[in-house]
Image 1 (tube, rainbow, N blue to C red):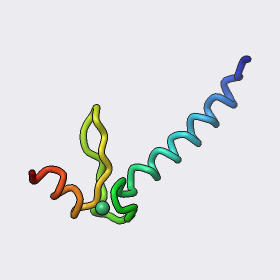
Image 2: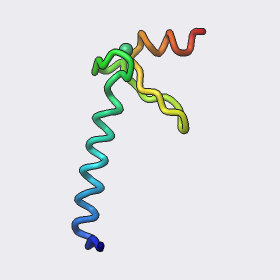
Image 3: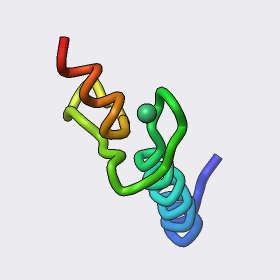
Length: 58
Ligand SMILES: [Zn+2]
């Protein structure tokens, strides 16, 4: 199976958009607002302010 460069670029953009959206939704409660951020270069957690405090405050 081969994908030409045009299609390859299109798929990459779709994937980027999906990932960007996922990274703004808290993985615990599902809230999506400006407090939600993604933490960590390897073990990635996407958390709102409330759950970020719980996760890091122990
Ligand atoms: Zn949350």
